[in-house]
Image 1 (cartoon, rainbow, N blue to C red):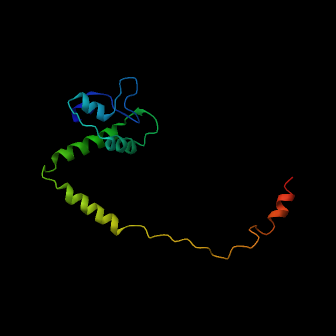
Image 2: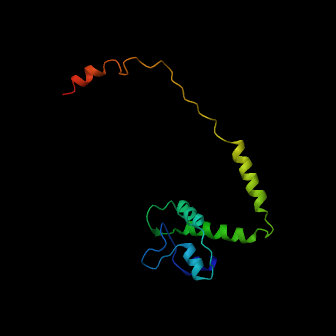
Image 3: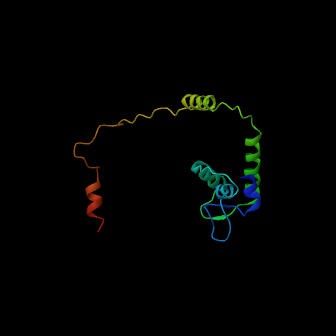
Length: 124
């Protein structure tokens, strides 16, 4: 992908822009990468805050390059199972409290709000 983002104009918000610009995943594919990661594509568009197809900014490309280089610099012995377990434990510790709804007052016997009929009669 590093080779691809250097060799091609990169876009955000679409696979291609019809004018030669391509997404980072297609750039990686054109340079030998054969993996497809839908999660990456969504994350790239979220990072770029792309609602429509547009050329990636130099800042976005620098962030992408920095993240790719950092991922290559990490040890190959990364224990993903441990990382996933730690992430799930952190989520469990920070779950939002359960919301319970209850009626604050007894329901009216007629099922109508007071004055609703009068308001309806005067609407015309």
